[in-house]
Image 1 (cartoon, rainbow, N blue to C red):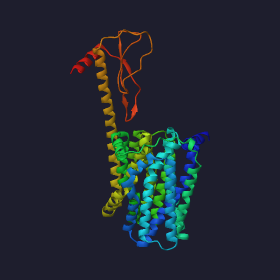
Image 2 (spheres, one colour; image 1 turned 45 degrees about the vertical axis):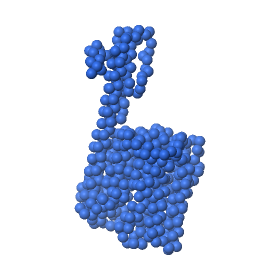
Image 3 (spheres, rainbow, N blue to C red; image 1 turned 135 degrees about the vertical axis):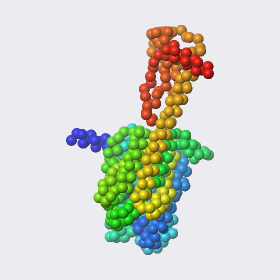
Image 4 (tube, rainbow, N blue to C red; image 1 turned 180 degrees about the horizontal axis):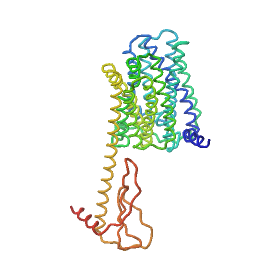
Amino acid sequence: MSRLRHATRDTFRSLRNRNYRLYFWGQTVSVSGTWMQGIAQAWLVLQLTGSGTVLGLTTALQFLPILLGGPLAGVIADRVDKRRLLLVTQSTAALLAVALGLLTATGVVTLWMVLALAFAFGCVVAVDNPTRQSFVLEMVEPADVANAVTLNTVVINAARVIGPAVGGLLIAGVGIAVCFLLNGLSYLAVLAALVAMRPAELTRQRPASRGRGQLREGLRYVWATPDLRVPLLVMAVVGMLAYEFHVVLPLLAREVFGGGARTYGIMSSMMGVGAVVGGLATARRSAPTPRTLVRATVVFGGVVLALAAAPTLGVALAVLLVTGAASIVFIATANATLQLRAAPAMRGRVMALWGVAFLGTTPIGGPLVGWVGESYGPRWGLVLGGVAALLSAAFAARSLRGSAATAVAAGDVAVATAVAAAAASPPAPAPAATPLDASATGPRAAALLRHPLRPGLDVVRRPRARRGLWGDAPPRRHAATPAQRRRTRRRARR
């Protein structure tokens, strides 16, 4: 019993923070309403037009602002108080949901109104997404960031199971308009949580000062930082080609397993249940490492390929359970990696690029995967995504090893230069028996020190050797032999 209590405490340790606890429960209510509106909006478009193409256009319009304006939205998130900005975005989203509900209830709604409101909602999400993502670090300690990010992902996927199910029952029982109106009311939970927070307990980051070129500055910063660039590129490839389940699963249910909407609903629910279970298991993990990201990408690509080869519906449902768990591990790991490794002044812009990579690529990848599934079969759409995930994992492993090797090479050059300069200078008198002077000219510099007990012995402090992808090994100290000193002098003369 104590082990179970300890495991539960580790899994939900972020909820010990009052501000995050309020935010968590508010998000649980609000995200369920958002998923409910998603299914109601799709059903409304099909009622108005009966066209799957128009339905795809509606989805593209909703995600287009994230693709085009996501980086600029990140600049806004870095400049202003994130809690106040969330109050504005959540209030605007609530008003848009209520407006669509009233238009539908009165019977005056038309297609152009749905498209305009979908685009407006996408603009709100473009600003809201990086603000919410970076706001997590202000509510919890850095050690709990990975746990908080994972719990957020669990909330989204739990709502993905509950929201559409409740929405379907409401559409069949009382109509589409009620879903929109209830979603508008669900935003009150988040707004109440934001108002009830204690601002003094937030670890607020200093807002970035206004200035020209901040968007370019953010892009340059991400591209020059392998710890951020590699996860974002991997996320872009996986989000564009492997995470298009809303396109592939309906085709798989209808064309491969001969089912209908009920079959599709069961497949989507199984993936959601797996995501919740995988998220709760991931929440116990400490801060992620690059190895975790690479492994998560490999496992996710492998289970997507296994789903493509599933011979029966029963096998496919079992694989979907694992696919949901693998997808949540991948998303939570990449998200937490970016949040922990981004500079505080750049975090909003970094998380905006995360939104572009994960959500903004949908207008590109959705039609492409749909065309492959329609032309060659749904299984080949899944094969495309699985292979893309495996190739991106190989790219990530190679890139991160390359960056580590470059850092080691730079450190070795600094060692050779410092040792040669010290060898060419006249020897200093031996100090008394005192602790070694730990001063150095930089994080990678080496100091030629005199041994406190053996004056004739030079001691070289070498830079930290890289271990694995990102981990540092402890510093090593060892004596430089006469032969090593001669080789160092010859190398410096060349």
